[in-house]
Length: 248
Image 1 (cartoon, rainbow, N blue to C red):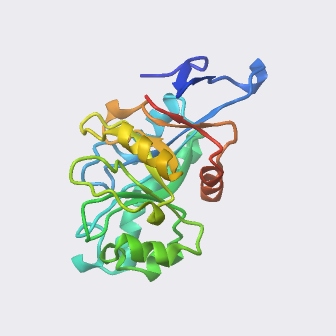
Image 2: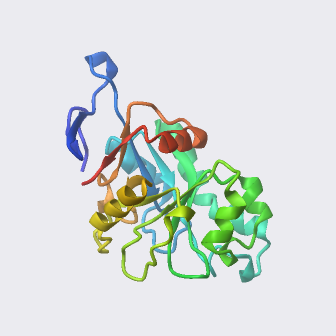
Image 3: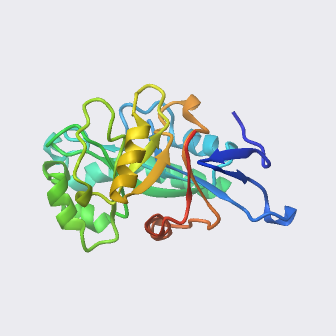
């Protein structure tokens, strides 16, 4: 489904109009921070290039590629050199970034990280290549040890869909935020509980489509009147909570 430039999106109790500045409105930029590519994620069914084109047509200004970094999948224990494994993991992002640069969609690198300790997933923003290459045992860490390793870095950790089946809600002190709206219709994420948890603990709440299929487009995301140009901008805006959350 394509969104026209003047379509109203309901965001909590606020209506925003997606318009251009030369029409006399302040422009609002729409972003999706939870997307997967079939290039990397075993559950993804859409190639990176099409993911990018679909989001562009749906009115998004940018996306974060959050392919799955799972134990036993993106993992040096499979036998490949870690640098080669990591290059494979980033291939979905690289293909999406190349297509985004062609058509004018901003693409950011992130990951959906899982540790051996449980089935939880974490949307992680701000990891550098240097950090990841120096920590090839990421999946063998716990959330607590990962938090300790990244506490002095510009890294944000959000528990994805924390109230979905098989998830374990983690202590708020180990998180920067939670995904308060996950739009994946193939799971019951109990988003209302995630939103309540974020408010109770003053955590940052974000929204994402959890994009795996073509029909996952145009659900979830954030709106901001500041264009996000790189990963540092992304983290700065999230930390400042300078955005509105799309809850549909």
